[in-house]
Image (cartoon, rainbow, N blue to C red):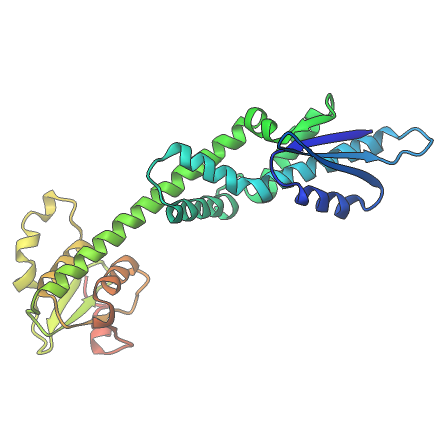
Length: 288
């Protein structure tokens, strides 16, 4: 019994896997021809007839090796090639980052049905089925023409990864623009205390403990009921308008205000001080 595998990709992985799984119980013949790499594996049957269960086990393990080759050695290249065909104008850094995100979605996503082991098992089952009638496998052609569902899943995660990447790029550009606005204008107030309430609201105070909300939010809240503006947007807009030299953040529940805190930190950088606990932090418990 022998099976011949053909691929345009390097076959060092295949050779290592055969040696690891079979040792010297399976023979290997490797050669190159016409730009392709060939790997013929054959069972040492001796003089007796090989049992059917041994043949099935041999085919099963070869199928698993092929599946591991596709997922562990070829998948990233598949993602890169598909991405370049789907989207134009991406630089090398963008391609690398998007493919990294796509692979993360595949391997780590909580609801993903294509985690690494599951992908290999699904591909191995298809290959093993193919070996029931064939002993010659062009791996590249098999992936392209016999695994449409696998390729469709790769395309889907690429689309998700591209969306994430573009949103992050837009957010980074937005943050850079806000930083420019803050740096370009003179501070209206030197120091602003931001008290974040558990209900999503906030209060702004200067160093003299004067409430600044009415001074800097009146124009924003007039049409708030008829817009998509939320309290987080109001807070950022007010701080950009005031452009203080120092922002002191008071809250006892940073997780609730995670997005607002991260945005303020990104825009104001070293200007931001997160209070470790004071009377204003306790006061935030009553602000709603």
